[in-house]
Length: 336
Length: 220
Image (cartoon, rainbow over all chains, first blue to last red; front, side, top):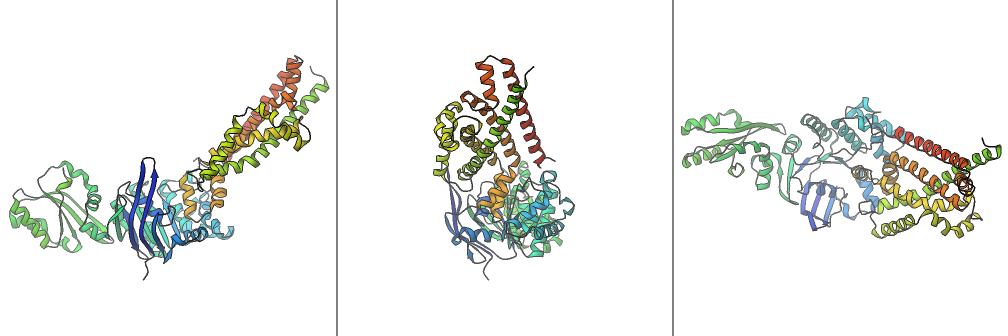
């Protein structure tokens, strides 16, 4: 089946004062219908430019973008505007019309699409119900909290029944609690209305919370793509490791000779692995960091372990973990 | 303290001043509003960047704005005569006032429209809004309070210009002030005209500010 989004060798270069900036370098990837696809990268990696290429708010210098098999690069302006009604977008700073109340904000895309005023209001009220803000219909954006504003933006983006929803750092301006509720809403929308969602973020936590697949962007290039589980268990590239390890940067203080990061999934969680390994080799291990997370409904755990100084024992322990099918990788790069 | 003829003259002068000011502001916006919009969208950060159009308009605006009003008034007299039929009186003064006001208004409109959040414009474009929709529903609608403040400033400035036109027989309160106060040393009449002018500016300014505040939805 044709993927809903297919990006083919796109590049985007900006003319800056001090020469050219290659924001996106020859990127290709596909997104299947119904996926929640994450694009993660540090700031300046080119995420925002990349996501704007998907609805041609930024026109790539080269390459093609197929939405449902239709090449956006070949569309006329009018056809492109029509196509954009099927590709919704929400933003970090919400971008609501400050001089319109909540209801009229949601009517806005319908006005553009030429829907009658009466019909638009009816639809807007339904949408407000979906995002749980019915009582705020007459409020103005300035009177709402960040989370409420993003809910209005989500209602607004749903008005035209889009096939795709692009989220550009949609939760980056929100506190953790609100972030969770917005992510939950996005997940509901994905499931209920079968809308494909593309999530741009610099936070691994957001990816883990809702994404099924992920692409890692670094300096304008796509360095790794795969399922979130794969990336979490066995990141292949340095950039991906950095993004994952970013979260427990605080362990840097605990100096140690050799450390490993082990990851384990639901099935190995019942075996007392750490206890067993200590009993087996009669040498203690130091647990520096441990955490469990739910990725797409599965429990995934991770630990940072400080290994004993004796090299042979350390190697044997690594071998033991590997034998038990845990993900093992050395992280000593990140402790200095 | 004044006889009836003088009081009538002052009342007529006030009306003439208001007439010149308001009609010139209207014509000024008929030219200046589109000018400001084109300046905004053709700017390199705008939604339809066009360096050639922007530079040409930018130059014309700067050129017109750098000519002192009194000189402009005399400079366009042949044109005024062509349009109105005569080069003195309040109706005739509307021509140079409009020519002076339009570029100034265009600049103010440009600056108001450029205050609109780029993100909101981008959001509208992501929904499939075309250039015309963005101008009407986003730029003008979101900048409306700033635009109204601009109208208030424009009215005040044009009122001041209209008084200056009195120097060459432009009609209105300025005309009276110069004829009586300057040429005939009747300082009391001049002071009264000044007081009326001050009151007019205050009222118009107050009205404009009140309206713009009332229409602003950005407060909590």
